Image (cartoon, rainbow, N blue to C red; front, side, top):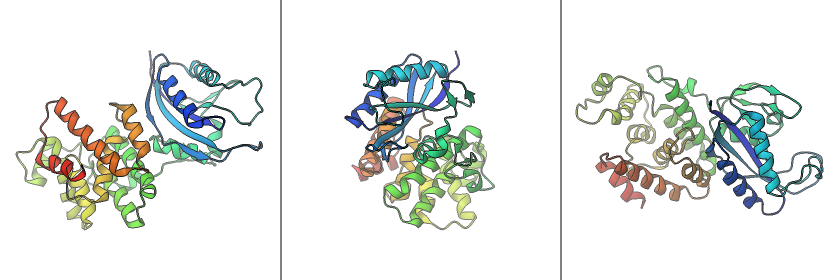
Length: 329
């Protein structure tokens, strides 16, 4: 049974809007052969269409499902019905307690009487495009149906980068998160650029051979998985990069640093919360949604979760990580 990734948009502008979205998230997570991988922050938007009505709360989910497109559509309509929506009696484009739309379903292109995919509304709903980008969708359809991404990591990667396709996808998701978080955590233009560059460069040598990493760093004792950050920082310095906040963010992104400012801390959080990671998906999506309201609180929780995971796996807690934890508690 094949598993597909689908992007499901939620909306509500009747009754307890937040409760309706929470109900939808819970019920979708309970669908057979389906799991919620990630969720965007909840956003309030003006109503779309000709009918005068109140504003909507919107959110998008990334789900993995073995349900076919129309079976998933039927299940979502049942969730809407149980939330109080009656499609037979409602005014078209009018207010509703819950709207659940399939925006994308894998790479499927479908046009039937019931379902069109990708959803034609992507072109006219800028918040959907933002949400797709936040969830790491490889392409987002704009009003002219041209593929775009929020940050072109191919252009930002240095010529010496050694990354495979999966690593590149991870780098894109991290950089997308950092680009979106910069305005909500009140970064100025310089700091926002530093965050994006650190995101694009942090794993530039993650798939490089061990011999190269040890040669660049001169470190012949540390575990191999800790060397790609320091090695990338060495290469960046050789190319003339002088921003300490970028170099330190890249250098220590795996274990953390008590000396970090906001750039390093944001990279550490984004590297953990990016939606492509599979473990603790619900908890991580919840934390990502809180970044704009309580970044420091999210940072503390991320450091704690990473330390707890290392302890469960029997991995070493490095002194730098312990110092980092003590600096954010």
